[in-house]
Image 1 (cartoon, one colour):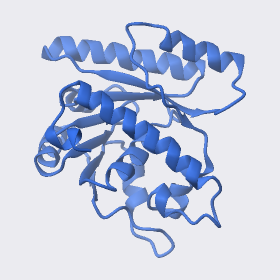
Image 2: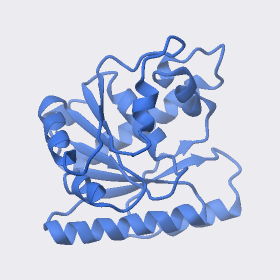
Image 3: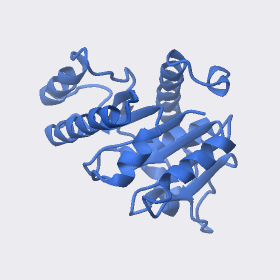
Length: 234
């Protein structure tokens, strides 16, 4: 079963939001486990039951990780149970991250089109290369641009994106996750973007289109790697 890790050492890169959006959308059709390995536990807080919040999708299981000593066991247990496992990693280089990345079928590196995010993304890529050498296992990765403007991008944003997209050694998602009210609303309202009330949140339909495009491209990448039967059927 595919294990997908989200990694970036810079706060505000869209790491947790991207992982949550993917997990919720996949959970529309298949069972998904998302492992909350960030010490701040933002996914666990999102999923915590509250009267004013919508519950997570029924097919989504949230596992809170608290130790590097249990992360591999938790990944293996989730992969034996569910077709998809998603890991929201902590935002620093650590043994926990290295252990989790070593189990991943794909590492997604979310980043904004900003210089600090670019530098943090390159640090993660260097770490991935080192882990691949250490384990003798090639670990595929792909850059995901987040919080981008759908139109009227700045010159700086276009330049930074081009440095990654034009590099033949780097794989990038064609789809970008744009800056959308619906993506931030799930933390306040709970649940997935599909469960949001259009009377309270703007642009839900476009947000759903954005996420479904991201998921479709992800599935295509996994299929290209010869992924599992569940992925091929997705």
